[in-house]
Structures are given as structure tokens and as C-alpha cells.
Amino acid sequence: MKKTFSGVQPSGDLHLGNYLGAIRNWVRMQDEYDATFCVVDLHAITVEQNPDELRRRILDVTKMYIALGIDPDKSTIFVQSDVVEHTELCWILNCVSARMGDMEKMTQFKDKSARGSAQRASVGLFDYPVLMAADILLYDTNVVPVGEDQVQHVELARTLARRFNKKFGDTFIVPQPKLTKEGKRIMGLDDPIKKMSKSATSKDNYIALMDDVEVVRKKIRKAVTDSGSEVIYSDNKPALQNLINIYSLLSGKEIADIENDYIGKGYGDFKSDLADVVIAFLKPFQEKFAKISDDEVKQILKNGAKTAKIRAQEKMKLVKEKIGFVI
Ligand code: TRP
Image (cartoon, rainbow, N blue to C red; front, side, top):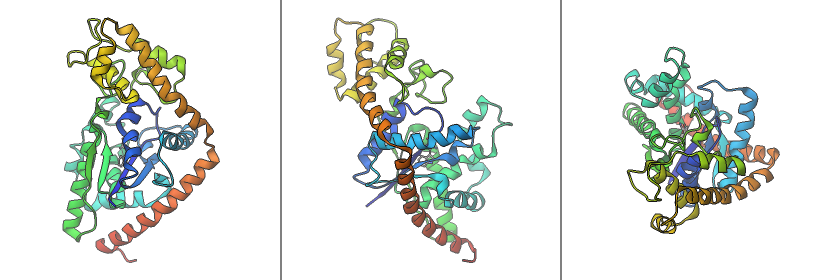
């Protein structure tokens, strides 16, 4: 069975973009692949985190994975920092595989550090793609399902794997990125030109998976629309296109049918129905989430870490042998 690995950071609110762009695909993939899904807390601390909030979010993101349909009996679910091999392999790749020239090309670092000052960004933020490569390479991952913004990082993992293999002999599988085609289209509600993002300046940018009914209605009502008044799916109407995508993905209705339903109606009717569609998805999810206890999650994470650790240790033994450590 081919292996897949992916992860989400326990920082900020998980939102519809995370679900439609990533986690929904993971749920489908877990039947076809030997799947591992990680809560990447080591990645989260590349920017400042409040320790109590971080602790809470790690448990909550895990609960969300499960409530969204990741099944701990089918997939391995674990917290990155529970498996120290991630940091160990990251360091080794830093030294023997990654070059400054690779890292200076990383556009996400340039974007993120430009928002603050590059001088004040953590060294970890700069090195984050190497840690991500370590995550992927530790588990002989064949396929990495990611959004468009992470493809460059998976490309780096490919480069580091190839370079290591060339220098030390076959050690790592060279992974493939797998783009989610609808997911990359989930854009911000307040700015349909940019991806929906939990680090957006306004919470009106996204619908968080934990938003309550009133907040969902308000955010959709406030969502930017295009000029005109007809509900049609066109590149000239990027805001509406995004809202129709969300409607279609959550309801399973074809885009053409949605357009048909709103002939002669306006944005207001469409938005009010879209809110119903979103709420019909979020409600059962939130109920499932509420039923999962912290203790249950901790047990699932403990089991997941055990499985992940066995695999990671085996890989690290090989890596250390190759590079000349005594084991
Ligand atoms: N960097 C990814 C993000 O921010 C999360 C991530 C960390 C990841 N390690 C990974 C994704 C390994 C896929 C595979 O979205």
C-alpha cells in the first residue's frame, strides 16, 4: 500500500478552506493509502504561541480531524513533538542536504517574514521547510496531499531526498505532491483574490469550523460580492465564484444546477441559502466534536505516537548508519 502523510498546524482557527482544501481529501485517501496525519506543533512554534492556547489547540485540532472523519482505526494520528525523530532528522538534513540557496528561494518565508520584519523572524521560520521535509521523509511517504501554497515545500523535500540518496545511497522515497483541485479555489470571504487563511487580519476572511450559527450568517451576509446582481459562475465574478464553489462542495450540487436555481433571484437569496448549507454541514460536525473527550483524544494520540515512533526510529537508524554515526 502506498503511504501518505500530511499535517495541519495547531495555530489559529481551522476553517472551511482547511476542510475543503485538505482534510476532506484525507478522509477519502485513508481507504486507499497507509495514511498518517500529524498535528504539527513544532511547526506552530516557528511563530509566537501562547503555551496554554497551544496545548488546547493541539487537542482541539485532533478532535476536529476525528469529527471530520479521520478514523484512528484506519489512519495514524499523532502530535509531531511526541516523535523526537522529526527534529533529529531535520537537523541532519539541515547539515547534509539543505543549502542556503534552496532556502532563500522559499516564497512562504519571504511572504511571512515580510509581514513582520525579516530581521525579527525566528530562525525556525526560515528552517520550517526542512522540518516539513523531515516529516515527509521519515515515513517513506509516496504522496503528500497539500494546497498550492505548500507545493514548493514538497519540491524541497524531493530535492533533499534525491541529494541525500545520491550522496549516501538509497535511503529516502522521493515524495509526490498531490494538489487538491477544488481546495485551492477556497478564497477569503473579504478578499476573493487571496486564499482563505487563518492568519488573515480579519476573522471575516474565513468561516471557522467552530463558528456558531449567528456568526456564520453574519460572515456570509458581509462577504464581498461582485458588481451586478445575477448569480452566475464566471471568472469576472471571483467573489461569487468562490461562494458558489463552497455551496457546491458542501451540498454536492452541480454548479450549473445552482445557477439555475437562482435565475431571477439575487445575491441576498443565494447568500441566505448558502448560510443554511454551511450550517447544515457545521452543526453535525460540531456535535461530534463536543462528544469527544480530552482523555479519549490523549489515548488516540498516545497510540498514534507509538506507531509513528516505531517507523521513525527504524528510518533514523538507517540514516545514522549512512552518515557515519556509531549506533
Ligand atoms: N507546512 C504545512 C502547512 O502549514 C503543514 C505541514 C507540516 C505539512 N509538515 C507537513 C503538510 C508535512 C504536509 C506534509 O500547511
